[in-house]
Amino acid sequence: MLTLFQSYINKHNLFSKNDKILLTISGGIDSVVMLDLFIRAGYSCAIAHCNFKLRGEESDQDEIFVRELAEKNHIPFYTTSFRTEEYAENNRISIQMAARELRYDWFEDLREKLHYDYVATAHNKNDVVETFFINLARGTGIRGLSGIPPKSGTVVRPLLFLEREDIEEYAKADNLSWREDSSNSQTKYSRNKIRHFIIPGFLELNPGFVDTMWDNINRLREIEGIYLNSLERMKKEIVIKGKEFAWIPINEINKLEPLFTWLYELLIDFDFSAHVVRDIARNLDTGSGKQFFSPTHRLVKDRDKLIIHPLKNTISKRFYIDDPAQDLSDPLQLELSIITEFDKSEIPKDPHIAWFDLDQLEFPLMIRKWEAGDYFMPLGMNNMKKLSDFFIDNKFSLPEKENTWLLVSGTKISWVIGKRIDNRYKVSPETTRILQIQLIS
Image (cartoon, rainbow, N blue to C red):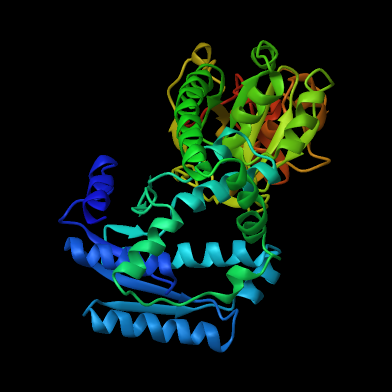
């Protein structure tokens, strides 16, 4: 067994002899066997144990057992406890999901703080097969069917080559002691239902079912690799990413088949659910302005593209420029300079550079977001125009409107920054001093 253990680690390049490994030990048979193999193989390791306070005295006894195991083997021991039920209720997630989030966050924090290289968990072949069926029952793409990988970032799983039966035989042969988790026999949990009802039925049909599924899942993982490579190439071709926004041309989306699957994969990085993606797909040919939300992003269906940007609080703060010699770095980078010798024919055509008659401006100048009811006199016009109408005429998308900043002199808009100055502040034959403001992209 030790030889197979070492071979599996080397084959998948999980870690080296010089690495320090933090072992997640619950006290159950899987983790106890993992600890024994690490000790026999001579790796530098420590034990991390979580008490989820879900089984009363039994949970506390598990902690005592693991602590004694660490002391017996002279291995550093770290433990913590969680109010798991309270966390699950506050975050509206299941107890199992709460326990998973709590323990993995703590493992990673502990690993970084103590300078360990990897966190090792005791998942085995049976866990992989059970996870496959859990994901299949919930509904999943190919990622959910490709199993638990041997290595995910700093998390390694060196027992994936073993079935639960192999682990039990090893533990008994070496006279190891472990703790039985009473919750493993309760069928209220999805994993236990699959473990006690679904998989035994398959084993009756095929005694080697776990190994068969292991091979199937490995093939699915290879197919996933091909699939993801193709997907990444397509993302690079049609998903355009800026500093704050990403957008996808609708005409490129409409070329893809099957449309829903491609669109789902293109939007998966932005946390859009399958349900929302189906709604987006149904609205690709409708008018512009419709919005769709994920927990982290908003997507706006514009005339010819989908625009995606992170959700964030609307900025209502005001920023001020006290004098013409003051540059601004927040919320925009603006460079100011006074020009006294100039030729009016040299007025910049670049919308990011604005020339103003300095003597017409009232300091301090204010920088703020646009608001409903704002109006100004666009350069070249002699009458006022609502800013909302200006946006419509210039085909601003909803995110572009929301990201528009204004330069305000007194109570008057002097510049829709990066777009158009107000005609009242333009350089005229009477101008003697120019204030140049440049927006640095």
